Image 1 (cartoon, rainbow, N blue to C red):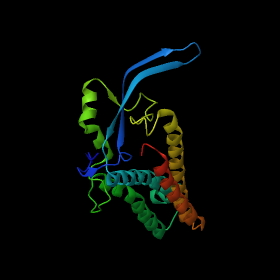
Image 2 (cartoon, rainbow, N blue to C red; image 1 turned 120 degrees about the vertical axis):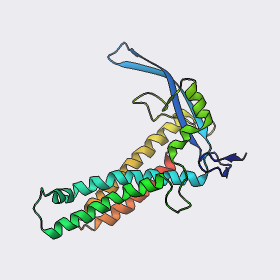
Image 3 (spheres, one colour; image 1 turned 90 degrees about the vertical axis):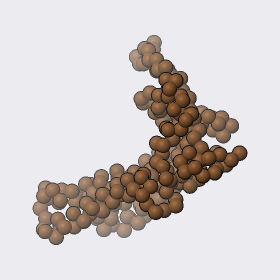
Image 4 (cartoon, rainbow, N blue to C red; image 1 turned 30 degrees about the vertical axis):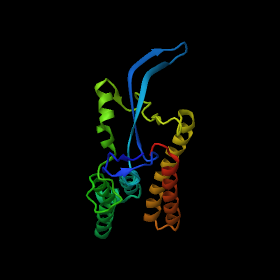
Length: 226
């Protein structure tokens, strides 16, 4: 069955690229017989049609967001921030180098903003960002009926289930989701280590760069919600 992608209005047939939006309502919390609180709520989800191009574009957007967070952390961990602020003694040439690396550390954030706003002239970029899925009519209808964004209340935000139970059921999707998130975090950590090792002129920087790229690729293939 041919459907229209919600993000770019192109025709799409594959459902594996759909964005699943989770919602919840009727949250009830009460004490249990042991020391703790049990939280119950109703959950629902909507499949928002998405084509392969927009799916890959959203993966690029999320990857650039991770790099925009990791780059400043790596910049500060390398000691360049201390040099820039004058905490560590350095020459004028050292401060110029610190300024140059500060600009480089800010580039991923600028690229992420340009990617999110679809300013880059690249056909792999989705014309609308990922949160545009919340404007889908089916999602808005549930919102009018009292449903809230996210699959569950805090801290159960990331438990969205695919409504197509033939493709993904809750128990089978959970291990893939957890493994995908762990793989993504390891990729982010490898990116930070790569930048730190590069500043220290270590030959291991190239190895960790390849490792980070591989982990991000595996995360995008494992996690059913990406």
